[in-house]
Length: 152
Picture 1 (cartoon, rainbow, N blue to C red):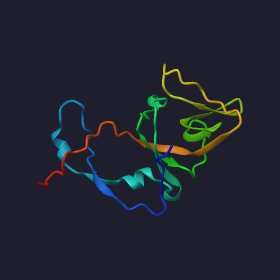
Picture 2: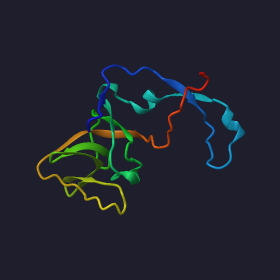
Picture 3: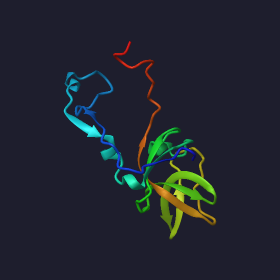
Picture 4: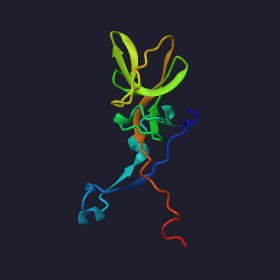
């Protein structure tokens, strides 16, 4: 958990084009050539800038929730955790990302990887919730360009 970035000021608006026509995984659509709207990722992903931080996930215990090894988690430290939320937590001295469950009046941290053999974590002494995961960014599909388009 050494990759934490804190927001200390209002995020700068970053309005990027959003094509409203869905992209089929099969054949391309000619309608996808139109920019129909703009989207600001800060507005969509960061609801409380003063309480939001990013952290990179490691491992695959939350794979079935779409959180893959290397995913960047958007975490809201100001949001009160509820049963069913995915949280960044410290349990008995270890940091983890799991789904928070309340079972018989006690909190548990549940992995989401069917057949992965990950145990449900039940705090022995300490459970500290750092924040609620509000979004995640999967970077596994990216490939860095060798050069900027249009540059020589």
